[in-house]
Image 1 (spheres, helix red, strand yellow):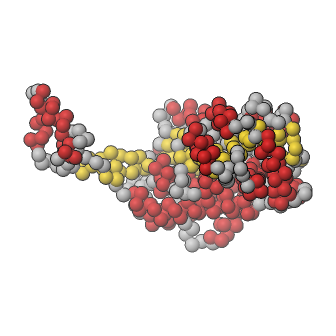
Image 2 (cartoon, helix red, strand yellow):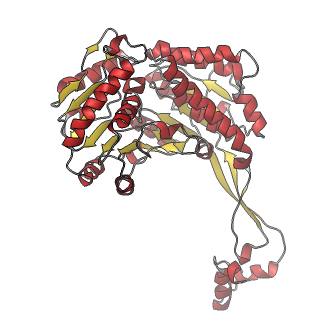
Image 3 (cartoon, one colour):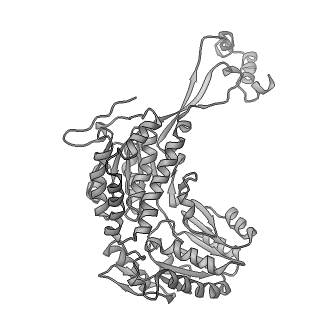
Length: 469
């Protein structure tokens, strides 16, 4: 076990060294409340999203608290097996050696959170980092100020101050923070900021995990239960006012399917949010004036036709659930990830055309297919690439801790959740423990060399040597 030291005056990454947690019980002691007012902590945690983005308590509990607790419980339950050395196969030349893979902490890791789920996207990767035995520096999003303030208060109260710290601030403070050398950087956010982080990390050859998002398409094709599909789409898209990196970003369907889907979407929206969504307590607000302005500009630039919603209020940061049809591939709504309650619908003639359109863009973080035909689901799954895939629903795949969550290509590098977070923050060390037996075998590799020695050596080190024996 390594010792950790907390700085007394100014912070730097050299103030910490790797801290291997010796057992799952240690993890439990670090990440489960130490018996002090857990119900109060719960209330504080769900209060932050209500203040920062007027998120309904129901959504805050599901997306910020429960997903974190479920991942934590899953990790604690399985950590003993994850930490065990993994045996490696051997050949004849190494038959008497103990060969295995040992998981070790990387050292000091930096986790930079995002504003849309400021607790989940900051603390959930921390579970994997602590499970792997690392020291952790947390950088909450400055946009969600209430959440950042609470994290800065609770982390030193419930976790060891020798191994865990919280650094608050904006872009300037983050740039200063990145001047330090870390053993791993985990970032969730935009591609623009990711480029700056990559540049800073490259100076120290620091590995980076990027969770970036992207335009996650939803294909609706063939026979579909329109009522169920509309309800699931509306929930997945407008949960947290569409400010989810895995929310369906746009729909691809035929014109005839669109004409059947629109009435079902209207009915689902009325069922969920009422005649006037603005007065509904279950509809979140946009996180900041800047984000509201960006979304409003997209609606003003689109050449599509708004058929549902479109209303907004800048002072209240309100934007109604909005559906736009007749959207083309080069429309303003298709230029970037929307991250808001705007749902464009693009018309295609076939599932092949939908696949071609998806593949012309960058690989998305998630991809959804709604169809009662398994052949359609299979075709889209096999002919596209995305971070995650889900049929006949949205978002729910990321709630399962046994599945990796992460992007591919421009939507992100690396993954986490459950074991995948533990692996992300672990170094897989190749180990071979040798004794002094069978020294005569070693003469095959010692000079003077000969063709005979080479032939025997190649055979004893081949993958088939043990099988043949």
